[in-house]
Image (tube, rainbow, N blue to C red; front, side, top):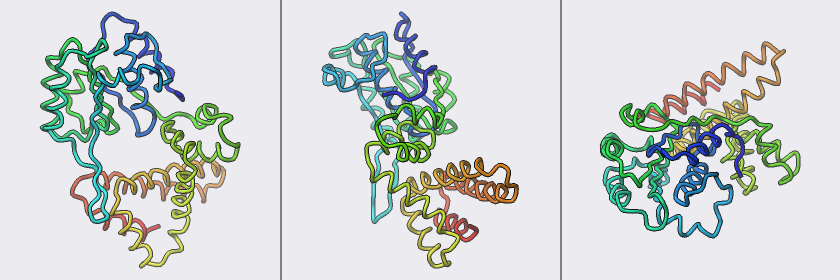
Length: 304
């Protein structure tokens, strides 16, 4: 089920119908908008020699297609309660390159999808560059990227770029129409933050909707917390920074919706955008390496 991205789908289907298939792609856009899902469909269409993207990934050919499809993703580790997403090391890229160099087992191409490719360290990117410069005629590489600035310009210049954007809330609601009640669909549309991938996760798991409820509730309660409670919250957020970033993104999204609903109330509008500015500044700081995330979060919560 594809929600949104009509132009991107048409562009990829034009490639499938072409005799000249580019061998490297850069799917760029926010997390969970559907880049990976569409990359899988595109990869399997290439392998099978199809000229259209197939929504149904669970077809009879799935097992055969996987033989010629490799997916490389960063490793998520948890140590002493702290969750981290590791960089993709050069050794894993080299192993993937060896497989990519082999002749396809069953399909027309061997395909490598690198999810969260911004987690490739510099050595890994330079190693990958060698394959991009001298590609095997039966190989295709698709890089899934949410932070473009972390990708070397030499890699970007050798890839066919496809941009993915946030999808309108109405499109998400229409795409999920009939699968839940109206009130739940409204909540899913808001909590998905314009990201179809996240909307599907929420649709399939009521617990995730409740988790998002708790995240918004937390935002509303920060102003009534004492300093000790704020320090404890900052400590918990710092232990799982990937989750903290997602929570802050949801806060910003939720506050923008509230601001839109109060366009005629200048005083309230000013309050919303003051908080949004603070959250966006903190979000950028937390994405930098070597930052004291706990201290940054403590200062933020003290100001809210």
